[in-house]
Length: 254
Image (cartoon, rainbow, N blue to C red; front, side, top):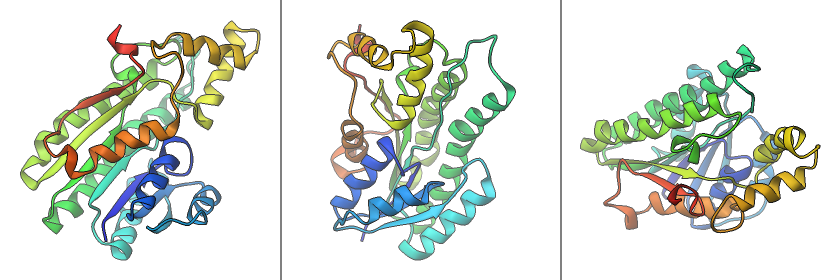
């Protein structure tokens, strides 16, 4: 049975991806710190299994231990989705050191640790594999309050290119997705900051204004991004590696 390892799979795009893979028969290992949310996903009932591994991706030892445990139970992954990430908006003069460190440690270092451990399993298994990294539209454009977040996502996009060259000899493909705004629990928290700053605290007004910035006229649902992640993990995308794929409702086409 094919297996996929997914970090940050408890909510949002991660959870939608867990559902997509599990519904298509994959055994899914979810690396997160939200045990209850993953348990809820597992209880939904899918043709593939969903197994939780408590993991703080900021700690390389924790990543190594969890990925080894997942491989012992499910075998080497055939696919990896590196999705764990956080965002906290702040201006250049308001950024706190602890927030800077957390964003870099989770979004960038955590991604690198995860790929290093999982790709070694793929290499040693000798069957190739696919890796999808969660970047962002902010790998391509700038947005207010997102200096550190955007920097990490730009780095992740570049990481996909460099990793694709490093791993191609092992039959491992690496691509990155760059979504525009997606309605998730994480972004809902972020939009409170925008609402407080520009819309007198009206979060609905902030969301409506965001939708107007997208040529398609709305923000994305997590399931729409999960579909692209799944495609990049399948043989149907076999000629794609090193790609940075906008999934942004036309935002960066303007």
